[in-house]
Amino acid sequence: MSLDRPLAAVARLFLGLALLALGPAAPALAFDTKAPTAILVDVGTGRVLYEKNADDPIPPASLAKLMTAAVVFDMLKKGEITRDARFEVSEHAWRTGGANSGGSTMFLPVHKEVSLDDLIKGLIIQSGNDAAIVIAEGISGSEERFAEKMNAEAKAIGLSHSHFVNPHGLPAPGQQVTMRDLAVLSEYLINTFPKDYALFSEEKFTFNGITQRNRNPLLALGADGLKTGHTAASGYGLVASATKNGRRIVLAMSGMQSSDERAREAKRLMDFGLQDFEEVTLLEAGKPVGEATVAGGASAAVPLVAGETLKVLVPRGSLSDVTRVIEGNGPLPAPVAKGQRAGWAVFTRGDETMREVPLYAAEDVQRAGVFSRIAETVAGQFAPAGDSAGPADD
Image 1 (cartoon, rainbow, N blue to C red):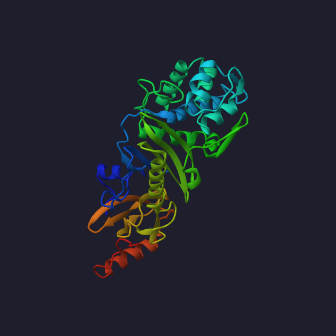
Image 2: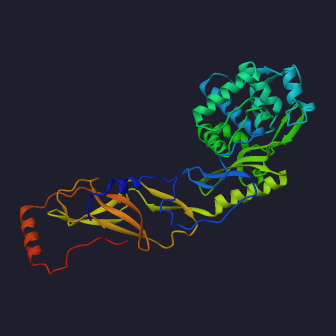
Image 3: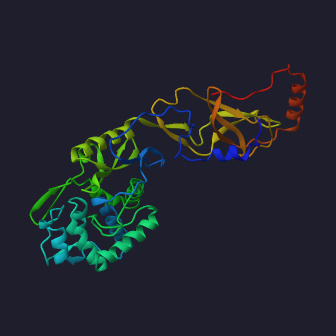
């Protein structure tokens, strides 16, 4: 088997775990949701497990508070603000997001100073619109100027179809998000601010003698974040994340007709992502999987190993008919250097080649002494036809 592969074939080897590594022939799973727009992503591989109108722009409702949290966490990380900073509750924040506003509120008292630490908890756990406004005014002087920070941060993170006008998500012309962007934002929060992310799993928070529970219905079912949202224009939406057996998923959905329907569909999507897929290790880095013959070497063969561990995320049970064949590029002329490309692992389904992965010599093989080489040459001349070593099967 030649080491010279077409460039297209070599490029195909490194498509990444975001794709179904064994190709389109793997069976697809039937799943749908009542949500008008939704996405489900495996965080570890980046693979989209399900999507439905995921790039449709919608009003964010309280899901905009995820972007507010991202700005605050970034400033805390850079040391630009501290948790013990105290911001005054303006009359605007009190009237627009307070107890009389009819929306989610932290019940902040007007003209009182509140620590940023409490405001962050009120923002995330209680979904307080008043908390979002006080944070915005305390950091930037106004909601409008804080929204500029939100949009700059969104651009830096990679949110390509979202635009923010205020920090709380109440209806405003031009304010929009997509489910794909919210999934990207959620992964950013999880990976960049792991300690701060823990707040999203807090079930309740008490401020000023008033205890409120986290509105995320999936927390009691295995999720550890992130946020719910609702306005008349957006319907009932949710962004959530959960882990199982070392895997993490993120889901985002919006447009549901009620909080109960949101909870049911979100659980279905979460269960689908965690239960109907499995991560399979195809090759383990450094572990011998076969061998290639060596001509004129101190050893007759050299073990073959993969350069990196190859894991794929696939529908559960879909690899049952996939076969792995190890093809050594023998005989390799001695000397052979450790790390020298020396074979391929070929994965097939029936007559179709699904994936080819390069393999490397696991150790050095020196040239044999002169008498050993003479003996090998003589033995080769008298060897029966068809007795040469072929590819190793696994």
